[in-house]
Structures are given as structure tokens and as C-alpha cells.
Length: 145
Image 1 (tube, one colour):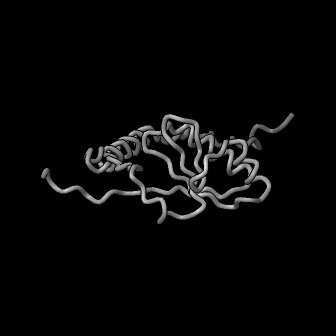
Image 2: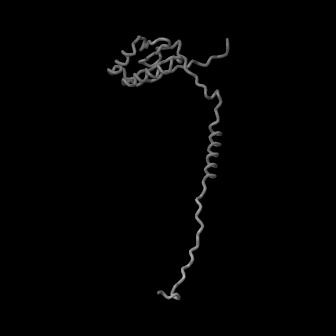
Image 3: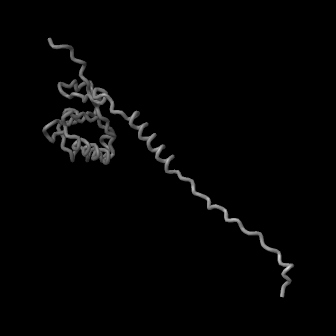
């Protein structure tokens, strides 16, 4: 049996308080509120006049001074006019595919449906043509006569 005098009492272990995890919720809320405030100030809607787009007007055209080959898409009809000659869409895409036309200058009326223009541009680009949009601006009109 062990001698009681030789028994060394163990140091009592102190219970350390558990470490608390840091709370980041307040700083996260502050950052989010600062970002909201920043975007409210920076992203304020611009003046309506600044956001207006002046679409080109394509009537009474001086077609002789525009770049060639010029593809004119006429409003209200499916007619395509290539350098003054009416062509079908299929014939035009076939001509581009055969290498007859590498670049086309496209002139479209401002009232033409956008989806039709996008479809035509996609067909011509897929066939191998570079499509360049041509726009005309009328000189600013002076006051009423």
C-alpha cells in the first residue's frame, strides 16, 4: 500500500472560462448599410434628358455618298435593297456564304422592328459577312419659319 505521506496532492485544475466567439453581426450590418447608402447616392437616377437617345432618321437619303455595298432595309416590307437592286434574303445570305460579300453596310429605318434587324444581322454574320451599321443624323432644325 502506498505511503500516504508520499502522496503529493495534485494541483487543482482551474476552470478557465470558455472563449467567446467574436460577434461580427454588428460590423456586417454596418457594412451593408454603408453599401446601401453608397449605391443610393451614386446610383441616383440621372436626369431624363441625359438618358434620351436621338435615333437616326433615314429618309430622303443621299445614297450616293454612303459606303458600299449598302444594304437598305425598307420599313413595312420584307424587301432588301442592295446598292439599288432588290434582293431576297436567301439570295443575299447565299452570296455572302459564297464569298461574294465580305462586308455589308446596313441602313435601317428607325421605326423598323429591332428583332428583325437582329435576325438579319445574325444570318449575315453567320454566313461570314462583317455587318456595319450606318446611321444618318439630320442637322439640327432651326425654329419655326
